Length: 164
Image 1: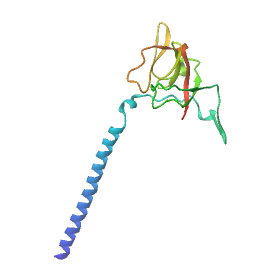
Image 2: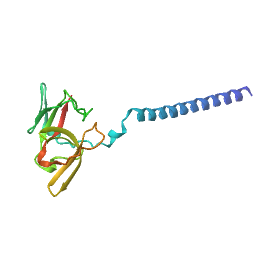
Image 3: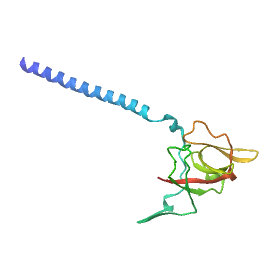
Image 4: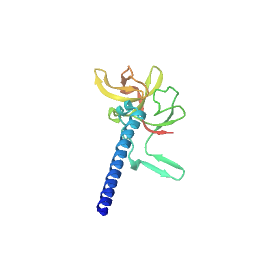
């Protein structure tokens, strides 16, 4: 009878330990979801990613430099905060000039001329009207889209790299 009591106690102990393990995983999973929701800005998940404008075989790595086939523009950014945290003052950008409407995609970050200034924002829509193609843009750190239609001829380039 003692062996049976010991067996029951051991079985109950194993069941309790297993229940505690399952309970701790459940609590941990629950807190992981709370942590995720608290620290991830869900509005950023609506942003489309930029298109891949450079193929791997166009990039060459050397011991003291990186080369990319093609013609590019090196740019710097002003402290406007409109594209934070993606772009900010002190960062350098590499732009590829656009030749046709097919060189740009939703999600791309472009620079464009607007009222004698150069602006840099993300494309959120590409459309066409009586005047031709245009894109709608938005700063990553701005709640609303820009109020202008950026005409294709005003686009300077599409960003293919950011050097932090």
